[in-house]
Structure formats: structure tokens, C-alpha cells
Image (cartoon, rainbow, N blue to C red; front, side, top):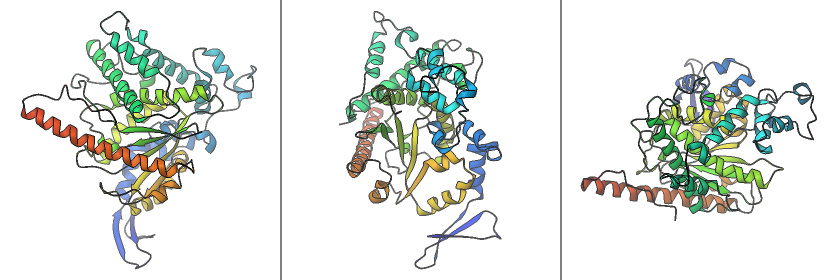
Length: 423
């Protein structure tokens, strides 16, 4: 496929098939440019590349490792500190923040630089302490003791191969903790918050990070992130099924907290077991919908993406290795290539679009996707496993939908409805 522009129609692009030279579709991309400018980058399109990185509004920027792209603002260690760095430039942070692990200091130093890393690292340590059991005010002898045991189960180390049952358990525990904190926010709105004010950009603890939590209650959230361990690697494949997200069930701040806890468990143990290499993840975003899912429109997810990316960048910098979106129509890949010049380099370099049929019952373009897999021996097995996970998620959603309809017919609500664990 090749692209033919029409100068008389501002911002218009036509797509033609090379074999028959017939017009396949016609798209006016000017609204797309405007949406990207307003929703994601705003004034960053006119700023420098370093300012684009600091905008914290792109999903890719939320976990990226821009240091390898030449976009990081790390500075010169010789200029930022005169202390002995003990063979690594972030040892100064280790001395100043003894509660932080070496890998945590390394991530924040790489993302922000020695001078600018102190405040973000301090905010992250506040967040981490906030969700330690006793920081939540939980006592083993209190009636809330199960919450303490939940946190202990949540904090256990992951196995060398993360099984589906373990991954689903971590997902449920992350949401349990998130909902528990929401309930505390409702009871003490002036004292309790989901994220420390310093992370949310608030100077006062009395400024709640969520405007109104009263309309949200503990609700089963279908798992839309799945971790696949890559053998002999510190890189994890994270499969995302965003079509499952129902924005009416929980606000963006609640999603942010649950995902932050989920990723904390996902990466922290790998950091501890392999101290020579930071644990990173490839986010594989499956755009296909399914009849029993919520199937939100992409623009409906923009506020959620903006908030989640900002919060995750604050607590999990330097995590995303690549963002791979699949399967997308060929014309969408062409549009991305057209507009990629206005995107930040860190987004442009780390984002891959894989062309394919995006209908809900389509099969994956395995050969095209396998090119972007790290492990040569197991890449097709991993892709097959991703398809299996998606099919199970669809089946589970159908089963839950039937249960909900039956409960409504019986005059019962969905409060006690639970999602079954992964088989």
C-alpha cells in the first residue's frame, strides 16, 4: 500500500492498493492531528524533546527507557555530585535514601538525573510506605486482619514462570487493596488518599486525589492485563485487552492504583533476583473487541490513559521497553507513519503497529508478530498462549454476563458477583 496526498484538501490522505491501483479508503486525518495535539501533547508539540518527555501524558512515556534513545535528562554525574559513586552514579541516591533498593535508585536516576531524581524518588517511597500493612493502620489482631494477609500474599515473590493462577491472584489482590483504600477515602476524605499528594501535584494532604468516590463501590473488575514471563530474560511480556475496560465501574485514579500495585509485584522480584539488569516489560495491546465486553471507543479511554500514565510514571519509571499495538488495519499503520514525525522520539522509537484484521473473531498475524518477540525458541508458543488467554477472557465474560442476567431476574444485585479465577 502506498499513500497519495491531495494538496487541495488540507490534511487529507488517500490510500491505494499497489496491485490494482484502486482507492481503498479515504481518511481526513486533520481531526486526528487535532485530537493528538489537544488530548496527548498539547503545547508539547511546540516544545523541545526533553519537555515532551516530561509531559507524562503518553502511555509509552509512562514506563519507557529513554536513556538508550539519547533523550534522557540525566546530566553529568561529575557535575551533580562530587562524592564517590562506587562504580555507579546513583550511589548518592542510595546513601540519601537508605530505604530505597539499588534498582529503585537506578530507575529514578536514569529517568530524572541525579539532581532531579530526589523529589520523585521521595514521592515514590511515600507511596510504597503508604501501602505497607501497618502504614494502612492494619493490625493482625484487628477485624481487618484478612487485609494484612492479602498484602502478604500480594507481596510474595513470583515464581520463575508466572502461572495464570498466580497472575490472576495478584490482579485480584491489587484491586482488593485499591477498593479498600477507596472505602477509607470515603470515610476520611480529608486524611486518606489513593496516591500521596506529591505524586498528584497537590501540596496539601487535604486535597483528595479523586474528586468524588461516593459513587464507586467494590466491584469485580475483569482482568485486562496478563503477564507472560520470557525465559532467561529480565523482560516480561504484558498482554493488554483494553476492550474489557468499563469506565463506569471505576474511575481513572482507582485503575491507576490497582495497576501500580500489579506492576509493583510483577517487577520487584525480578529486580531483586537479577540485580545486574533492570526488569522491563513489552506491552502488547490487543485492539480486538468481543461481544460480551464493554468495548469502549478509543476516545473514551483518553482520560483514563492520561491519568494512568501519569501515575505509573511517578512510581514505575524506566519500565516499558516497547509498546506493540495489534492487529490494526493497514491504513492505520500508514496514518501512524504519516504523523510519527510530530510525536516525541521516545514514543516514535518505542511504538510498533502490527497490521492485521481487527474484527473480534479474527486470527492473529502470527508471523508479523513473531518478528517482535525476543525469545526465538518460544515466541510462537507465547503467541498461542496469548490467544488462549484472550479466548478464556471472552468465555469468562460470557459466563459472568449470564450470571448477572440471572441475578437480575431473581431480584438480586451484582454485589456478590465474582469473576472466576483463570483455569
